[in-house]
Length: 328
Image 1 (tube, one colour):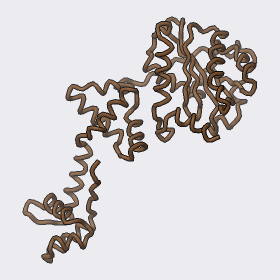
Image 2: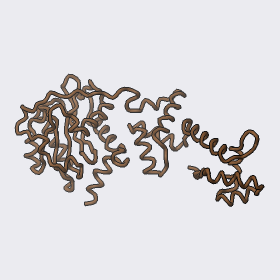
Image 3: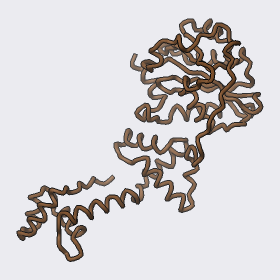
Image 4: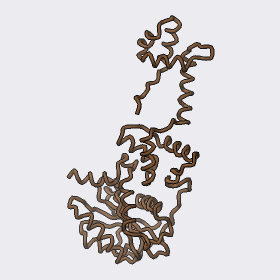
């Protein structure tokens, strides 16, 4: 990337105007205002008025107008950055995530707005990169809430009893759990999300019987906890009847505490709801998960866990989740 050009201030322009009136040489003016001779020459060439005169007020006005025009009409991106944007869009990153990660990895600035403008110009030329945008101009979906199974879940512990530390998101190891329903309610996914790291575990299920769902969850958690440094503090579930045998988890992992959100208050598991929305971009409503392989599910899981998140300072969930434990 080229070395940045430092724009002149209004005060410097006032000095230029005054010194020109005294017929001071340009090289001496440049030295006086602390600019290079080429910068001064460029300033005089671009910002004189129609009569060839230079005034501080007129020059400053022209410079500001040119800057506003440049903001509305950004120049062509460097080829490496175009390629970077294309690759990251293809794996599901948003312009905001790309912008943040470019700064994090390369210390280069490009705003999300500039990326959207680039995609707009690319689309006008017949390009298709805009199709990788998550919503593609569509309205955000309003997800249906489940019928509560509160009265049918034995030994259910309400979210009101959950420790305050969970709400404050001060530690890794507090999870939210839910399911995604497939076509005809005959198949689906179990989703578990860590509240701090946003690390996601996705498991395919062929039905919603509580025994099978709990078995799948135990398998996922057991695999995760094979790393002895990992901690499992709490899980907060939805009120679906597929979680009715939650004590099966407690019997296998005695240290975990399980809670249930209040019926019809999905915002109490807002991260899980948001994550399910991201997963739906890959597996739309009506997907028959019996026709989806475990490898396809794993690919989506890896994409989500390796996608930078603004809330994480544009680090990825995997980076935050595993780096936390590497410190111990």
